[in-house]
Image (tube, rainbow, N blue to C red):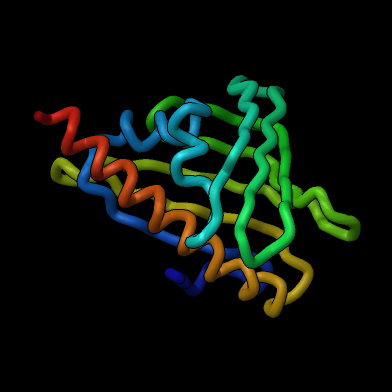
Length: 155
């Protein structure tokens, strides 16, 4: 997890560098055909996702694992700047879950793309830290998937 002096205790920030253009990385978040291929931590699959990909549109996804009960999450798209920025709400479907705001940005750097994933607010440092592993694994799956796609698109 990348941390900076400006990051508060109720915020999570994860930076990843991709060997792929920003337009391709962005597509993984906007197209359900791609989204279901990487969404969820290691060992989880995403059997369904509905993305009404427009400002004000609703999204929802389900994740499954042999070791955990099925879970789902949903939210609303707040801001979409193609290939640059995506802002959406995120809330687990289970009781007691709080709604957070996720901001994902992309910036091309020397033929690669830097993705920054930011989520806030969390109710405690412990709650925030409990999300680090799952999001890191999810974004690792995204990286592997997009780089495999980039390799096939270049061929």
